[in-house]
Structure formats: C-alpha cells, structure tokens
Length: 183
Image (cartoon, rainbow, N blue to C red; front, side, top):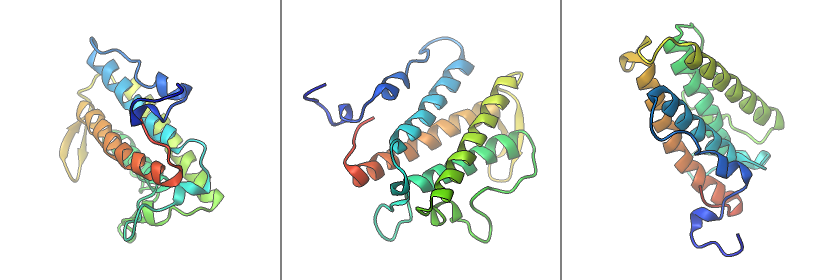
C-alpha cells in the first residue's frame, strides 16, 4: 500500500492479515479459541522486530512497557489456565505478594530478561491451548479467590477482554517507540 487512508492501515505485514480469519458463525468453542488466538497474535505483532526497546516505559510515573505486558500476560495465562482451571499449586512467574507489580517493574532491557519473558509467555500459551483442546466442554470449572467458581467459557471470554485491553496499551507503547501505528 503506497498511500494509506487510515492510521490503522499503517501497521501491517503478512502476519497482520492472517490474525482475524477465524469463523464468524457456528461453533462457540471454535470462535472463542480463534478470537483469543488473534488477540495473542496481535500482542506478538505489536512487539515484533523489537529487542531491548520492549522495556521502554510509557510515561512517568507508569511502569507500563511492552515487555511488562508480555510478562503480565504470561502471569495471567498461568493464573487462569494452570492454577484456577487445572488446579495446579504454582506461584506467579513475575509478580508476588511481596512484589505485586514485579511483572512490570522487573521488565528491563537485559536480553536474558527479554528472552525469559517470551519463553514464559509461549509456555503458558501452549499450556492453555492444550488445556482448552483437551477440555471436554466449555463448562469445565475451577475455583478462583477473586471470582469464585468460574467456567472455561468465562475464562476464555475474560482472556479475550484482557488481551484486547492490553493490546490497546500496546498500540500506544509501540507508537511511542518507533512510530508504528495500526492494528
């Protein structure tokens, strides 16, 4: 595209076009999985071709950064799929009761920190995808200290909302880093 007509058309690439190709009618489970997958792919796209810049903060006093979002979403994936739905007794990866904002505060430009964040996020997403695939239905339930009894259906909807909100943050963070804008 030589002359984009909308800001959303500026951020592109082959991966951008393939994110939202899932079904728009039919099976509820397939639609929820595909929409969540597209939101996860959007996060990756917003972070693509960046290294240490992923740790750049938005504006003071915020500690919000793209890397912080990756770390936060790894913790969120872990919480809902491993801890709540699968009942695993595991700590969060990047935050704790002692350091509740560790997911954002610990997002530094150290290459090992960047690599560890992506590895953790990919591992948690892979677990979640397996869990959803192997679940007999969307009515599988787990207990959560915040929400009480939750179903897999609710968790999938919540995860879509969580990613969509943070992908909005990622839009602004990426534009601040290198001017890239769009979907």
